[in-house]
Length: 125
Picture 1 (tube, rainbow, N blue to C red):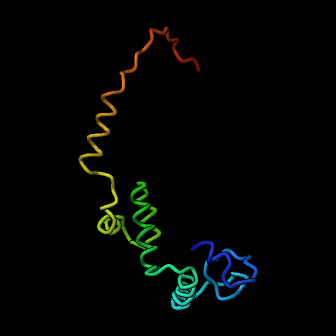
Picture 2 (picture 1 turned 90 degrees about the vertical axis):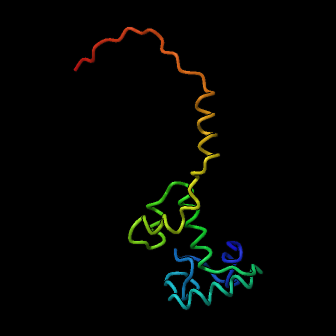
């Protein structure tokens, strides 16, 4: 889809920082309805059936929560608090029993650290 965006519209320069804009130089953002129209054209050109903006939003929220970035996900999704984000995306948290068991197994299989006998000197200021 990114490749389709980079060449859409064909032959026009892409100089601005906005992903979806009202002009070829990409310096003015689209309105929400304009964004949906432009997105639908790009999806059609890229031949990606069923793609929609809401799914992209959900994918981004799920990914950020999965990475432990709950506050970032809340901000990007426009949620007032992280509780809303967790209600919607808690399924992405890696907190099932198998993950916890694997972590404990790894921790207990690691040999304990040995401390070498070192003479320490008091800290001088």
